[in-house]
Amino acid sequence: MSLKYRLAAPLLALALSGCFGGMKTLRVVDFTDARVTDLTLTKRVVGKREFVFFSTVKTRVFLEGNIQGTITDYRGNPIEGVSVRAVADTGRRAGPEPDPAAGDDIFGIEETATSFVTLSFTPGISDTMGLFKIRFSLPVVEEQVDVRGKLIYNPGWDQQKMNLGKAYEPQLKESPFRLYYNVDTGFLAFAEGVRPVIVSPVGEGKGRMEALPGAPAPAQAAPAAPSPAASPAAASPAAGPEEDLFKAFGFGE
Image 1 (cartoon, rainbow, N blue to C red):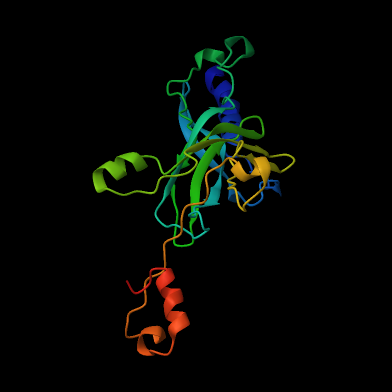
Image 2: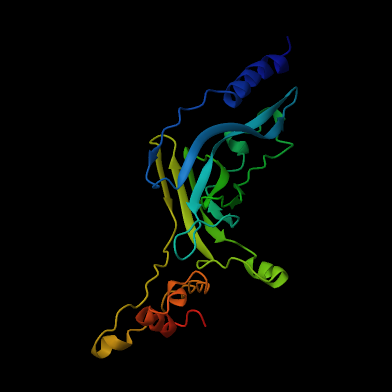
């Protein structure tokens, strides 16, 4: 056997053992208050390496799961069909470029097809319970996943309103988030920036509290007026006080 083949055989075994080694057991210490669910570790092919006498595939471990939340109206009723997107701003790099001084291209071996690693998020749409789930697939770099980005609520609502005449306008258009996971410790954290809390002034107040600033809650729709046939006040002439009371509220007019 020539020297080239004797050198290539150990390199091939080393490369294959690195690509198809065992996966670590998934540990999760959840500090997300159930915002991140269904976690798995998956090894996927992300590229290919060409050597002198053979080629190998490049693999990387990805953390996959869901970011979930709920969509409601001002009264807390679930709203179906509202989309939510996640857009990554930054993430941990997939590692440094090969260093020839460290022997990464020994014997003229070089990479002819670079790996293609993306931070993947699939948009979520709220269901009949108002629950949405954004599916993500994020590369594990140095035993960690650390991604910053933003959640965009019902993007394109203004265009939909222009085209269809009506749409759900989100009170919060977008919010920043950070997703962090450590493979060794299992520490999982999800933070969604500073979110507004709605308040409205109530009561009469006295002095300067009488003009307490702030917009009131949206007005509730008035109940439907009862039909004359179903109204006891209209059917009975003796019900004078009740009839006057209903007239004061404008019912039956």
